[in-house]
Image (tube, rainbow, N blue to C red; front, top):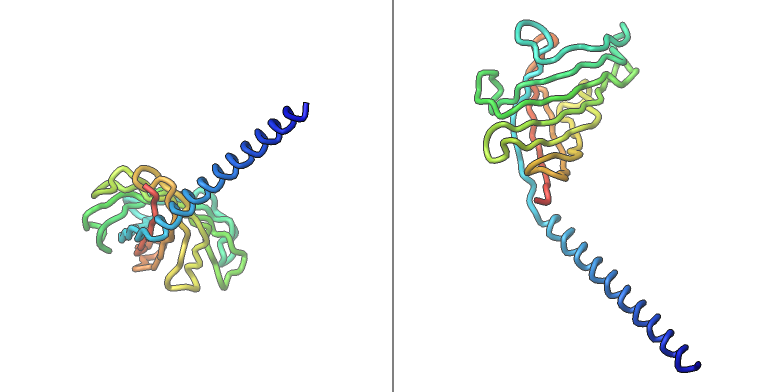
Length: 187
């Protein structure tokens, strides 16, 4: 009887030791992977987005009008905007920016957007991949806005990073945005 108990305790100790080794191995592997990702340099993409709300060839449509105040609170615009290498609309295309933006601030002196887009890349080594960007665009107050990269597909699966957005030009309601994406992708 005493012998059986010793065996049970020995099996319990062996099982606990095996579990501890498995956890330590998992933690070591995870920390090595995190260190490798931290060392990885981000991929930088630079392009211009042409948000055309008015005129022929519009690529953005207002779907909810919002308030009549200067803040335009609640206004929703859906977009399928052209992305190009240069600021000129005729420069070589690199993809599309598909998504929406919502005027989400009540303060007329500091309007801001909830900005959500999928950068759909059509050209170059990342053609067919997407990068998802979503965040607050304080376009009225900041010359350069930072928005988070929240994911992606293809080459950018599980991406993280950020976008720096500048207004490169405005023509009435139409705008050209200069965008620098800094993307970390584990694959």
